[in-house]
Image 1 (cartoon, rainbow, N blue to C red):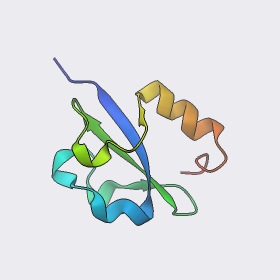
Image 2: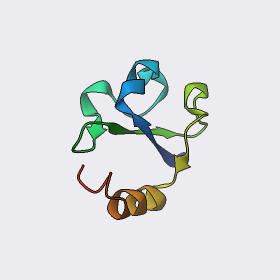
Image 3: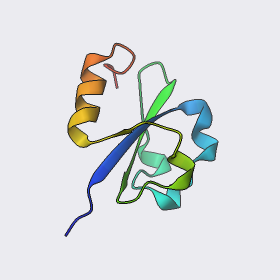
Image 4: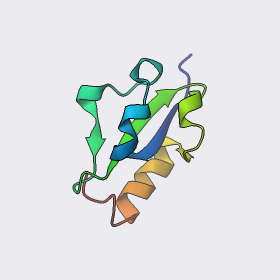
Length: 75
């Protein structure tokens, strides 16, 4: 059984705090907003400790967030 996938939006200035070995997103696959100020990370199962301070989104929630917020609508 697959663990659920979750999403986090972080500032690109915080990318140096990311331990890519603990998440699904790879450095070469980072999705950034058009202005380059935010990026999207994903992981499965338990949230890694370094992401505890960020809001967690389900797949449907992140789609709504990206599509409804002018900061995120141009990924």
